[in-house]
Image (cartoon, rainbow, N blue to C red; front, top):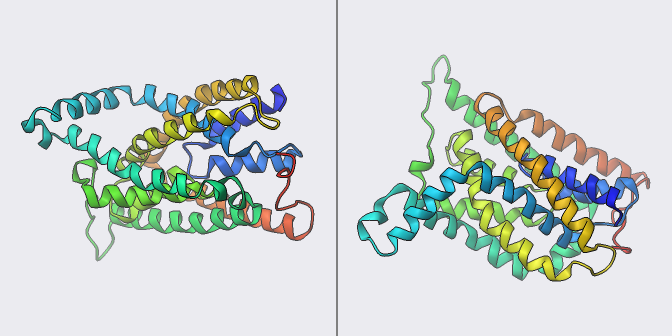
Length: 290
C-alpha cells in the first residue's frame, strides 16, 4: 500500500465512519474503483481506531461521567440507580452481540462478506430500512391533522432489552455495507428514540467494539501488502477528518432528515449492481492480491 493510497483510504474512513453509509463498504469500494488491492478487514478495523479516538475526545465529558459513575457503582449500591452508571452497564451489555459474532464469523468477515454484490445488497436493503425508520420518526415529531405529536424516547428510557436490541443491530455491521451507525440509528428510531439519542448511543456503543477489534487486528499488520507506516498514517487522517464529521453530523440530525443518506445508499447499491452485471467491475476486485 502506498502513502497516497493510505491517505485516500484514511480520508474515506474519516468521512464515512459516522455517517449511515458504511465506512467498511466505502473502503472496499474505493480500492475496487481505483484498481488497488482490497485493504482488508485488518486495515479497516485498525483505521477505525482513529475515528473512535475522535469519539473519545468529542464525547469526553459524557464518557468521563459514565466511567466515574460506573466504577463507583461497583462498590456503592446507591450509585447503581444513577443513569450514568446504568449507561456504563448498558454499553457493556450492548457490546456482547458484536463481540460474540465477530469472533465466530471472522473467516466470513475477511472473505465472503467482502463480495461487492453482497455489499450492494446491504447498501440498498439497509438504506430502505433507514428510510422507513426516519419516516416514522418524522411522523411522530410532526403529528398531523388527526394525529397528535408523539413524544419519543431519550437515553433515560434505555433499558437492558433496548440495549441488547441496539447491540444486535450493531452486530449486523460486521457485513460491509450495513453501516454501524446506520443499523444502530435505524434500530433506535424503530424503537421510538429521538434521532439525537439514537445517534449518541450509537457512537458510545461503538467504542468498546471498535477499539477491541482494532487491537485484535494489530497482529495482522505487515502481512500481505499492508504495512505499519501507511496504516498508522491512515489512522491519523481518519482521526482528524472523523472529529470534524462528528461535530457536523450531531448538528445535522437535530433538524434534518436522514433521507439524503437513504437516497445515496440505494443509488450506490444500484450502481454497483449495474457495473458488476456489465462486467466493468469484478465482485472480487482486488481480493486475490489482498
